[in-house]
Amino acid sequence: MLRKVAVAAASKPHVEIRQNGDQFYIKTSTTVRTTEIQFTVGEEFDEETVDGRKCKSFPIWEKENKIYCKQTLVDGTGPKTYWTRELVGDELILVFGADDVVCTRLYVRA
Image 1 (cartoon, rainbow, N blue to C red):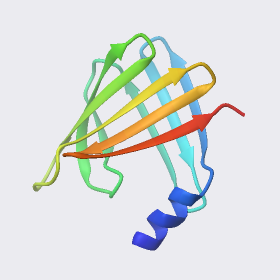
Image 2: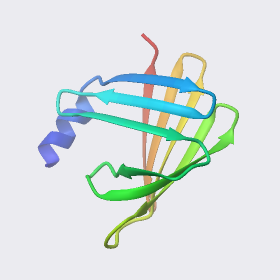
Image 3: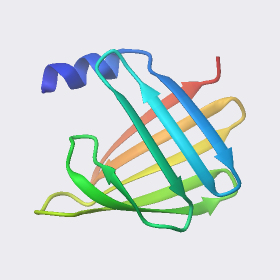
């Protein structure tokens, strides 16, 4: 599993984002896997954490161009996780958090 995560982290993923008001579709493709999520800001939805655990996610607008999403595990225990996505010019700043650990990834529009 760690090798797959390392390969994915080193790759240049392709991210497709479609927005219609508060409704979002986000598809992220890497050499390891492709993930797709659909959600409406302000409504809970089912999602998987980065490591594959099922969770309930609740996205809110943190500011005009930034979404904050809290994730709550469906079963078991684990770190408190969240993600944020913020558009700044031609850049997408994606932040994943798990308790006190934070990972930031920067995407640039092609």
